[in-house]
Length: 313
Ligand SMILES: NC(=O)CC[C@H](N)C(=O)O
Image 1 (cartoon, rainbow, N blue to C red):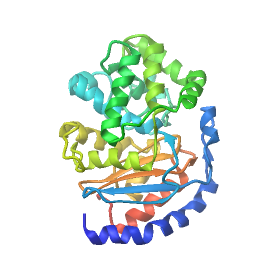
Image 2 (image 1 turned 180 degrees about the horizontal axis):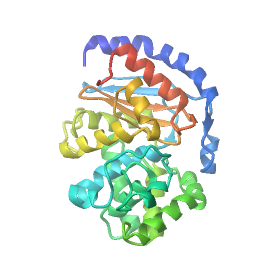
Image 3 (image 1 turned 90 degrees about the vertical axis):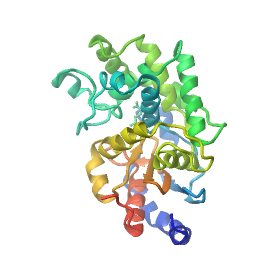
């Protein structure tokens, strides 16, 4: 991180947010989880945290939102820490699907019928079943504790309205879980596994929380603010690779070309991104494009990456 980069961000970030905010009108807030439809459509916010511990925010960075699919990166890491690589990759693959995040298509089409990767819903539900714990309550508690450490925020908790809303309406995920159970991929009770999954999707965060979690990944598992090693380097490498190939669902190729940074989005409009070794980034913009990514959030990251010359490629 150079001081001049931080100065440039401080000088320009608000203007970049203002310029990207117009794109919120082109998207729609997710409504298939009814509670998510209450999010402010025209919001856009960002926090960027450097490895020297300096942060810069702009726009609606204090807006609280649920992590949704962003949480999948960190449950994958916890499952790897709990079980090791072999046990995890016996149950999920390593390839992008090119399909929507909630598609079941390839679970039947290609053998063996394991989910293609841990960041689509079928893969993440499978990962939830691999988290160690005596039952769903202990598994969820372990996940929340892990997230708190990564975010350096002891106050992290659930948005129970979103959790209940998804539990009541998540029939597509439920049907996927039953299919996986029948195929012998998912172990344990389907309802218990889904409870763990719905709960971690409903963990509430803001842009600062995402930027800190992203920074830990960008620094290969060590929190540069505390010096504490939180994740083995190999598992961070795996997570960052999945973020690059599958993190923006079936728009990951375009995002790699236009932004060129490992990232993960969620249907609440959050995006977690990172600049290797240097910055953690948290973005929120609840209006989504057709692929389920934040319309204005993606636009904002394109601008920043191009202006700062941050693409890895
Ligand atoms: N893309 C997402 O953010 C999906 C997460 C959401 N909880 C779901 O399962 O549908």
